[in-house]
Structure formats: C-alpha cells, structure tokens
Amino acid sequence: MAENPTTDTTAADDLADWGEAMAEQGVTPEAPAATAAAQPKVQPAPFAELRAEQGSTAANNQLDLVMDIPVTLSVELGRTKIQIRELLQLAQGSVVDLDRLAGEPMDVLVNGFLIARGEVVLVNDKFGIRLTDIVSPTERARRLA
Image 1 (cartoon, rainbow, N blue to C red):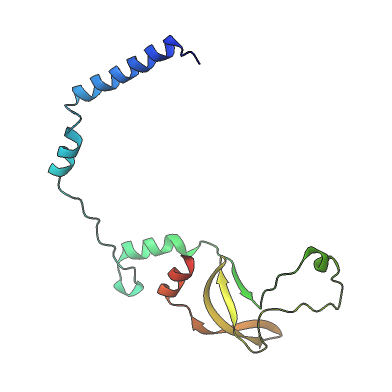
Image 2 (image 1 turned 180 degrees about the vertical axis):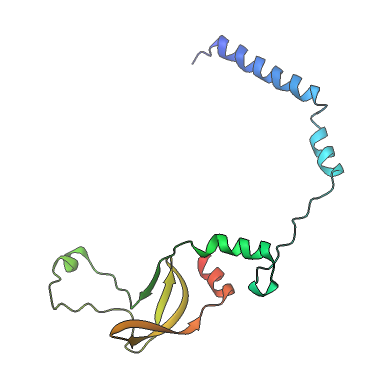
C-alpha cells in the first residue's frame, strides 16, 4: 500500500507544531515528570457530613437539592424464569411458582437496588409493607460489585 506523501508531510508539520508549542511553555520530554514531582500533592477536601441537626444553612441547602428527586420504590414478591412457550400459555387463573416461600420477607427495591426487606400489611384496605430489615451500606456496596 503506497503512502500519501501529503499525509506524511501534514503529520510531520503537526508534530513540529506540538514541539514548538511545548518548547514555548518550557516543557521538555523529561519536564512533565519533574514538574509533577515538584508540585505538592493536592488532597481532596474532607466531605462534611450532612445532618439536619447541624443547623447549617449550607448543609440544609445541599440536602434540599436532592429531596425532590423522584425514585421508584418497588416490592418484589419473588422471581422465576420461564420459557416463552410457558409465558404464552398463561391464562386467567394460571399459577406461577416463585422462588420464595410463603411468609418469607419481601425485597424492597429503590430504582432496582435492594435497600430493605419487609412483610406485607393491610392498611385501610390497601397493601403496605412493614420494614423488618434495612440493608447496611456495606452490604449494598457488596451487592453492587
């Protein structure tokens, strides 16, 4: 395959332009490592805990930013895998076996992530869930990995 001499010339010109720009800034091939070693390491600022009882207006304003973000909370009764053939055969009155036992706590999910487990309750003719176990932050992080 023959190379285009125009492309080679353009690439060489671009490389020369970069070399000139680096020289103007006083950067040599060895300089970036030396410059990085000479600069003090920047430490991230400590993250202030956001607690309502602090009384800080700034902290409350930061919390207010996320308070109105909508999330989807769902309760999962159980799961199962079925073939499309079985799915198409479902009709009114069909029973689908799930992977949970009767009386076993249900999973409470926020945007698809497990945050708690609980039991079903009836409140004013509506179903609800009483949280019995909140998943710890370390457990949540482990499940994400």
